[in-house]
Amino acid sequence: MKMNLPITIENGHGETIRFNELIHEPDGDTIIGVNAVMPKAGPPMHVHWLQDEGFTVIKGKIGYQVQGGPEQFAGPGESVVFRRGIPHRFWNAGTEILQCRGWLKPANNIVFYLSAIFAAQKKSKSGRPGLADMAFLLRRYKTEFDLPEIPSFVKKIILPIVYRLGQMTGQYRKYRNAPAPVIS
Image 1 (tube, one colour):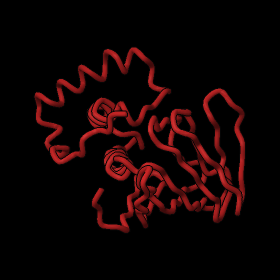
Image 2: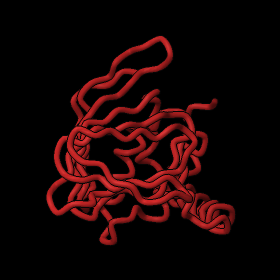
Image 3: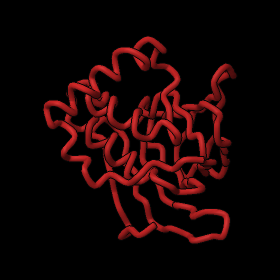
Image 4: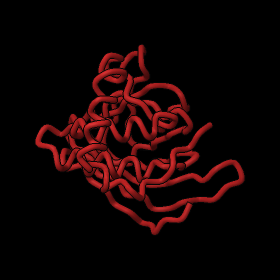
């Protein structure tokens, strides 16, 4: 994977990520970075099908949860690891900006995917990506990522219709250079 680092992305709704380093390893590249999360902000329940993800708190208090489990918390110097295939979420559980050092392995398409999600969130007034962007990203990268809180009906019926409409109206031209999804 070739990319010019560092890359900083922000979603306009309380989250910033700076991807600093890509470490090439025989069993997959590891992307290293730092994030800053405003109080009460953080991503929804999500899953990385092919990646492990970890954070070490630099400053603040992280709240985190795996699907079906209790809410847990960690502070400065403590680490949290989410294994691939396990739905999870995290958020800033404190009153100051949460800063963490983080990593994902293998890096695969995470920089593109999160950049696209953050750009769509930034454009949105609600803080959620628009339906057309979500339809494209969740369809294209379904082997890599998912949002389990989206109801099955929406995933199986609504998003495919929105995707087709997006194709017909040319909304996905901006994704013409999107990397190919990773198939396990």
